[in-house]
Image 1 (spheres, one colour):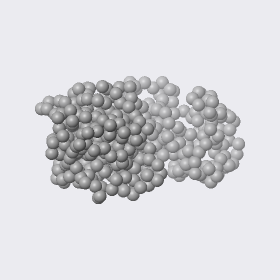
Image 2 (cartoon, helix red, strand yellow):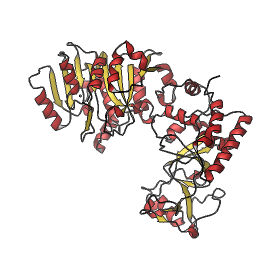
Image 3 (cartoon, rainbow, N blue to C red):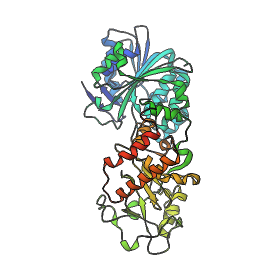
Image 4 (cartoon, one colour):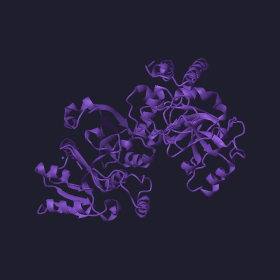
Length: 507
C-alpha cells in the first residue's frame, strides 16, 4: 500500500509502501470523486483510503484484506465512516460473476506470496493463462474483471510483467481487452533499507475500454526520487516520457513483450525479419545429479564449497575427447570423473575445475534410482561443442566455450544446428559483446538469461569478410582467456565489429 519512507513486509508477502509521493500520485491517476465506487482488493494499512479521505472525498469504498490483524485495525480505524466497508476475504478466490463491479480499483497487491498446493490448483483453474506462482498478476487479472465500463485501475507492481516469459498470458489479456493509460517505471531503491527481490517497480493505469489496433500509451522513466512523481500529473510529464508503446507492435513482439525502444538500433533489429538464436541453435539447460555433495568433485584451484565438495582424484579424471564418442551411458573404467561446466561469469573460456562422477553406476543412479531428484535432461547434447551462458549474470551476459564437456543446469547451452556449425566462434564472440547484452536486457530487463529469452535474440549473420574478422578476433580473445589475463579493453575491437554489424551508430 502506499505513507515516511518505510516499507514493511508481513507474512502474506504484502509490502506496505509508506511513501506519500507514491500514494498521492496513484490517487491522482485514479481520478475519483464523490460519485465513484472504489475497490481496494488488499487494503493493508489503508493508506490509499486515508489519502482519498484526506482530500475531502467521500466515495463508496469497499476494501478487502486477508490478514486478521490488519482487518481488525482497519475496522477500528474506519469505524463510524459509513462509506468505507472492510471485508475479510481472500480476493483471489472471489467469484466475480456474483460480485458487483466498480468505477475504480487501486492496489499494491502482494508480490510472490506463497500459495498452498490446493489454492494454486484452484487459481490455475480460475486463471487459465495467468502465471499462478506470482500473486500480483493474479490480483491484476481479477481486478480488471471487476471494473465497470470505462472504469479505471491503478496498481503498483514489480516491472517483471513487461517482458518475463511467464507473464505472456497477462500481457495478452491486457492488450486484447483493456487500454493502458500509462506505465511509470522507477527503482525499488525509492524505498530505502528494504530488499524486495525486484530490481524495478512500476505504476500501471488501465481503463476498461476496448482498445483500437494502434492504441499507444506513454512510458515514464528516469525519476530521481519519489518527489518527482507529482510532475507526471502536470505538463512537466513530457520530461520523463521515454517512449510510447504501440499495441500493434506489442502484438508482433515475441510473447507479446513490452519492449522499451530506448535505442533505435535495438528497435530496428527486433522488428526486422532476421533469424533469432532459437532459429539456428538448440538452446537448453543441462544436467543435475540430484546429489552434488555425493557426486560432484572440485579441483584444488577451487576454494568455494571446499567443506561440501571433495577434491577430485587426478588419476580418476577422464582425459579423452568425449565429443568423439559421448559416453551417455557412463564410463566403465577407473577414469570416470568428467569435466562439467558450471555457472560463474567468465568470458570465452572456463578451465575444467569441476568434475562429475560418470561411472556406469552413477549414471544409472541419475537415470533410474534417483531420477525424481536428478535431471538427466537434453542428454544428446552432453559432451558436444557449443556455447555456455550462465543462467544468471551479474552486470552483463557472458559466454564460454564448451569443448566436449558436460554442462549443468545453471548453464544455458547453445548448440548451432548442423548447417550452422560454422558460426560457433561467431556466436561465442556475440554472446560476449555489448550488443548482445543490450539486446537481451531489452528483451528481459532482469539478470535472468534463461533459454526462453536467449532464443528470442535476433542474430544478424554478416558476410564472409566480417565473419572471418570476428572469428579471428574471437580466437585471439579465447587464447587470452585461457591464460586468465583478460581485461575489458581487450573487448574493444570485438565490440566495434558487432556495433557495425548491428548498425549501432546508425547508417
